Image (cartoon, rainbow, N blue to C red; front, side, top):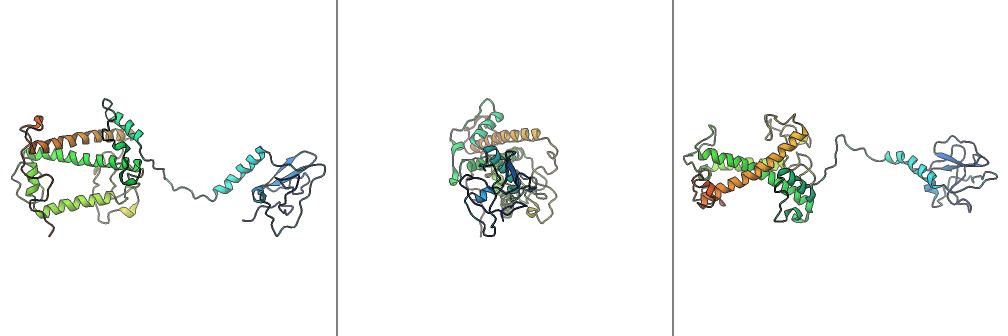
Length: 331
């Protein structure tokens, strides 16, 4: 881009002995009308200083300019004062801003959670216990991705496992009391032991469950929810099938009548305060459900290990750590 020139004279950058920082345009005290110049000096002799002083600072002469600036009589040119330099810088801001791409509408900066955020969250969840981290996971750095990356991963894992535990705890209680849903995978489910129930599920049924859960995991990690939970996204957020936060390119091609999260829209019009309180309740309930479900599993394998559940948890002689050992095989 060619430097700006006075509307009345063509200038050649040139350093004078008494004028190391500015160049006169020969206006002779008259305002030249060029908006890209500023006039300074006294009534006896005013001079016009171009805004492209930065261009001429290094004494780079333009080959197409031959006019030598004239010095107003009875006056000496002076270098710009600090206030004048500030005025020049502020005047150039709109020009520089023209080369910056505008931010997309609705864009926001995603901020990752830190250990301080976990400490504040712990007080909200349980003011009595507060922040309790005996394993030091809040200071961990998994896979060399940084502490904030690790905190996002752990936060999402806790919420997700809490949700699974809540469903498992309710399912364990229902089936142990002989309650079955009218629609389920065909099979002989004569046992009341929830652990033995999985062993009685046919191979085709196990494949359906595993593939369905795998699809949900794939879709949640596909980017449909927007920013990833390890990079400033919301931990525990599951994207909508019909209107993903990241855009319509993530929509399921097959029509899906209901979303996995809040299928009937109970929280659609809830206030931000109510949603925040609901997330706190979910975390607390998920933690309690994980403890309760593991209590059932421990009592079923080692009677008396959880006295409060004695006589409630049904015994199981299988292996919880080998859920596919009974009749599950790939080929």
